[in-house]
Length: 206
Image 1 (cartoon, rainbow, N blue to C red):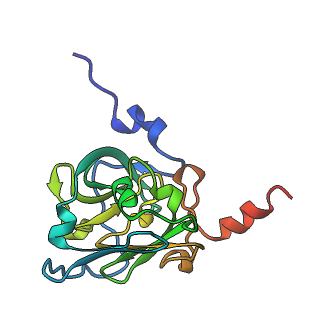
Image 2: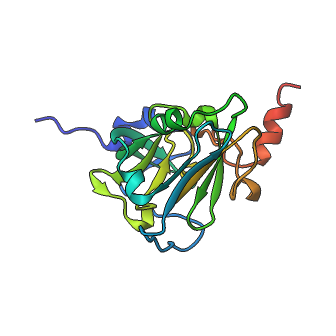
């Protein structure tokens, strides 16, 4: 029987530059884990949409579910492959709210006051979920449970934990880490980690 190569060799083509593969699921967030109360929780989508949403916990979790397997890359240089997420497809929510022609960007809002900005075009992708499960189990509180955003093609700080809403906007506005020196776009394969790189990118072709 042949022995498979170590994961870091077998999957190296799926790991962005500067990243290290891990089988663990490290825990990182800027504040404490907030208390969650299903009785008072609200999930909202508002702003540049034709049909704003304001759902309680039971209404949110009753929406159609899906699963998707994707890789997850943290700006602190770890990557975890083949995460199986369960939740609501973002495209399901976008179809329900109907972004207006003016909609271009989204501010993600979370229970602990955290925010992060994402282009609407980046959210409108088949692998973006409002997730309740990870690898077949309910999301634990430390990993953003019971509900978090998952945007696999961007660094993990864009996948806000303890999600409470999406503010659809006509213009971009920086979120928590973006105001504190992180890159506004956050593409792992381009190593878009820090805001100083944005200045370098804007002048490199001059």
